Image (cartoon, rainbow, N blue to C red; front, side):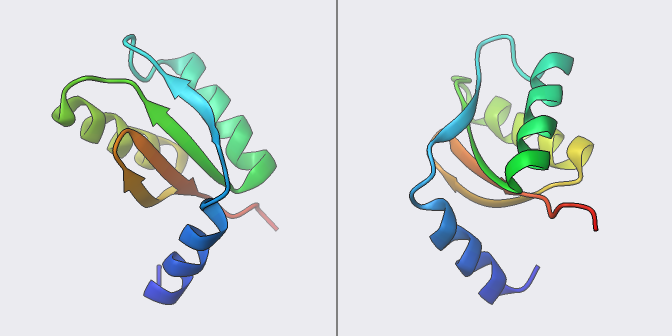
Length: 88
């Protein structure tokens, strides 16, 4: 992803609210399905990861990106922004 495109997506995401909240149970199959559904509907979403340890948050963020073929656009604290274009 080009830097200019990443900047554009971050600007678009600024006004968004997190649509999925990941709790202490972590990234489960149900959570992945909900994130997949949100990405299919909106392309650009925010997710709040309520995991205490930074390592857990980073691992969960990587898992989401890898399993759903999404790009992590931004991270601010516990809130991660993902982008996945709709299939044509």
